[in-house]
Length: 291
Image 1: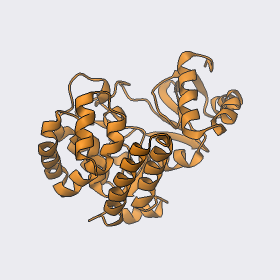
Image 2: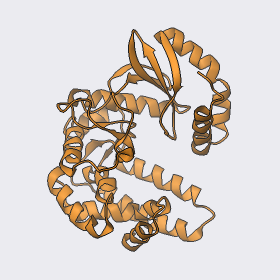
Image 3: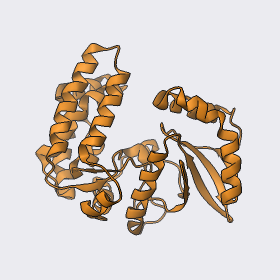
Image 4: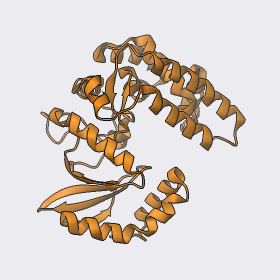
């Protein structure tokens, strides 16, 4: 694997933005780490793939089959992902975990690396709802808590703190995010029920099915105990802003959550969604609904 390739350099830059200078120290140790993992798991390493912000992701082969190697400087991220993937494994809606060591995961390679975000047409809403229901119905909140997943406010606080830090030079954006954070924290503190949520379920983290029986497959979770409505935010706001409220109602019915809670989650995240939206009309629509 060429650590100086354009894809590897892009991955290093994303990790630096996420983890700061610690990522550079970690990256300097990468050649030795890759040699150790290749020897331990008998890997033929390929090239980087994907665009994640917390891991270097490589194609590889082991025991004659394709696989994915993920390595992160934050071992807790890998540990949580592996634990959640194992909880969800019976659903078939996530990649299988082949091996885990520290901050490294060896995962099943899916037939397609093209996410829903890269496809010209959105997935049918009922297919998305089937995926959400499968993940949320696979484990009780008590069982998830036993595996070390924290309270729902933990994920909310982590996200908004990260976003506010990145927006530090823009007082208006910081204020908008603070309002969103307050609403999100209120929602997270009093959920009607708790599920093991994906935590980052958007079209860029969902792959089309390799076969009809398996359905859509979720990748790159940031698992957490959470209000089930919080996993549906990105799917409500995919299309025409004029349809957002109607889509919220349709999806809420399909996944059995309260539509007003789902819409409140969308409002809580709207300031962040506006900041990352390139289309001026959609950006304005996000600002209109923001908390």
